[in-house]
Image 1 (cartoon, rainbow, N blue to C red):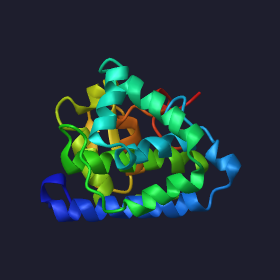
Image 2: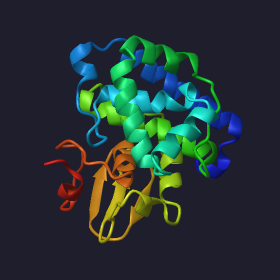
Image 3: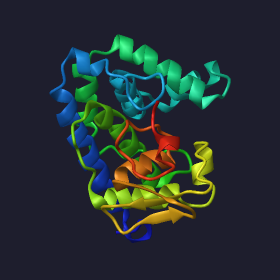
Length: 214
């Protein structure tokens, strides 16, 4: 299902499923797993979950205060908040917040519900891929993320250099770009589009090393 065919109801259903599945995965993790480095540079699993739940825990007023303290730099604010909240909130509390806000409607500025789904899918993969859970994001959700991230200008936001590369999904009828193919699961290609460096063995092709952690 492509982005334009997903109604708001479809998108909210997909978002709720992502949050529900991730909460179930997180609830079974031990202390060591919560401290596992995620695919978000500098963040462990616990910082990613703190970031994912921030929209549920922060009022508009608090968000504005945090942004003011960061002088309008969202990345600085998000990093500081994730690190602080990961220290102050127990894993069980973070899981509870995620589970209780399964159907909470939140949209990133200018991103709409497709942006919200992308946010939840990518950060969920930031956690599950390094943990090796084997979790597969539903095909409709992955395709929506891929369509969203390949709109004009979107990949450049994350600094992803796709020059001379053709991304080819081996589990969906989807490809993007020109050049020698780099292939893999569609959800791993979504991570590539979002600037992530993947663990070894997740991608194939002569340029796969460009998107693989060393």
